[in-house]
Image (cartoon, rainbow, N blue to C red):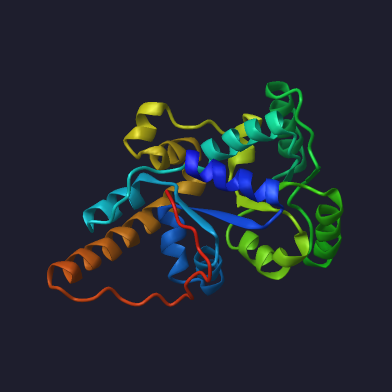
Length: 250
């Protein structure tokens, strides 16, 4: 976490763009079927592990993973940095009422913080150019995007260079958590890697099939990788391009 925060601080101080992505099981599985998503992850500057499934899978393969950096925890830490050092965040995504409530809760916690801007995620493709202009003219130091995959990746793929924001980070459903619309799993469940089960408990109609599908596919991919490793077979080459100048952590 400390390393990731420092990379974000350096980016905002130097005004040189750094894009962060948090990798969990669902995103890992979807990357295998979505080349735009795969390229977005591969070309990000900082890749953090957000999800115990990835941690366990990496350790099973002997990869040196120490810990995870969850998106919501990183967001909260960076908002604290913004409040202390005068950086201006921009929130993009979520429903209008959720977005405003999230911003209110952030201001309650950090009275000194100044938002560069707030924009909900309900805009059309034809309106994207206006959204990009709003973000660019806001002089934001960091952009937190709460839009679903793969919409977020397609938006960044089209407009990343035009946004002119030093630190960019996708935050998934974190605005809902900040707003109090969705509760995080208890700490014990987080440590056990069962946050996904708590999400199913809260939203069974929407989440049970998603997690059943992605967890099963991930288990199959991991089992195949373990078998290949035990047989001394080289890992399959990635179908997505490697990052040109990647700083990978987490």
